[in-house]
Length: 134
Image (cartoon, rainbow, N blue to C red; front, side, top):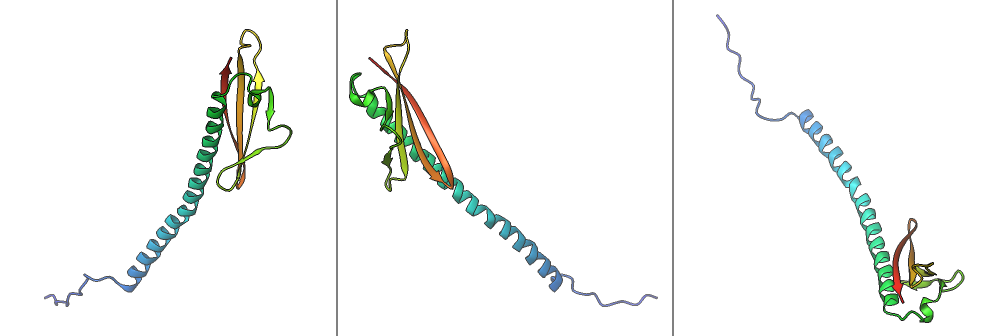
């Protein structure tokens, strides 16, 4: 005849199982939290690039409204030399533009290339190009 053993109640968790679960959860949370600074850096860099594009487009639109003989559309770098125009709320964007006269048969066009430089950890630049017609 068999003897009847009393059944152990196995519905609860042991302390060891609880500790393992907490370690696994902690590792997951640490991994996910490491993603937030990287996402924030990416968002900042994207915002700076968008602003640089805006300042380049802004200058192109300003130059497109000028007449062919306007001094701002004279052939060469503007501002001259190594100077630049500071733009942005803190002046942290540097903008220059270069005007080039096109050769025949396109001699009724001037090519305008606007460059905006900014620093976000490393130096970056954005260029935008348009053509102004006589």
